[in-house]
Amino acid sequence: MSEPGKPASPEQDLQALESLKEAASTCRECPIGFIGTQTVWGDGPVRAALMLVGEQPGDQEDRQGRPFVGPAGQLLQRAMDELGWPRNLVYVTNAVKHFKFELRGKRRMHKTPAQREADACLHWLESEIAHVKPQAIIALGSTAARQVMGRPVKVLAERGTWLTRDDSIKVLVTLHPSALLRSLNDRESVYAAWLDDLRKASPIMRAARKAAG
Ligand code: URA
Image (cartoon, rainbow, N blue to C red; front, top):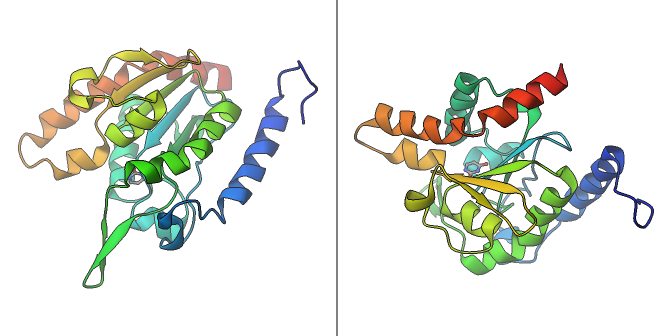
């Protein structure tokens, strides 16, 4: 615990995050908590300059217990590699911490979380933001944008421009990588435009890399 009036140290914030992760592992505050394999908490360092927020874990993330390790995560990793953003300097998480799906045969098909389910999860996301203390957040897709900004965001209209949260943290909104995986036409130009959106955060990552040595 930090002393009253004194900001928490990174070690104190890390400890708080570990306790929150433990508490979230048994979260049943909405129905999705009962169907997934496990809670998928965020991954990355406290004080990461940049936080990436997705919608919810997918099939692979639910099995492995880490965010963005499936196909969407691989596309995100490709983009981060091309931008020169080391993953270990970024905090990656989701607006919703459990995988919502419906069974089609043996396949677990992604289902978009209901707003009340995302809202039930919001305190976990806000606690990650409060303890990681990122300089900026990238919201990937409309669920993440809605939850991070606390208002509906039209992703196609607002993508690639910096928004500001009430706590002054800058927020960049862009498409979710799964949307790119679903796009049938012009895949490479859709990808290039997405990379252009993400690149707006490169100055923050350049400074983070410099600080990391
Ligand atoms: N999609 C997300 O939004 N998050 C993940 O972790 C994986 C896929």
